[in-house]
Image 1 (cartoon, rainbow, N blue to C red):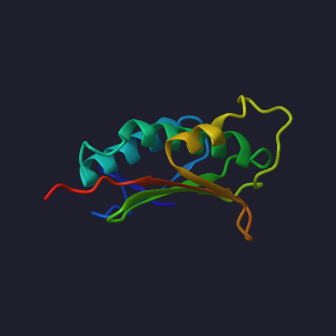
Image 2: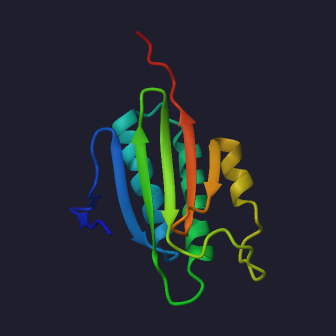
Length: 143
């Protein structure tokens, strides 16, 4: 897990952001703010910051509420990459994978909501856990 130094996550460069948080409810706003702040600083105010904030909140909330039901909380990781044509956000955990939860605390709208604001993909990697990929097209820069 990366650590916070002076309030900024480790793993930050002009085109890449990477950080891990404990999968607890208090980490949801921390992750959302860190990603939005990074994108605003690295990409400018024209980035779809509201859509990014919404999608990151939904993705990390899923990790907090669904990944680690037994054995205590684990962690989730958020990686952001700024490419010329798109911004990609990947949220991963090492939890139980995408297994339905009968006692779900949510309404089950997180994945469809994320899909309305970004190109969305969710999978269970061979090693386990869940990987959510969100791709936001970038506006062409005016010459």
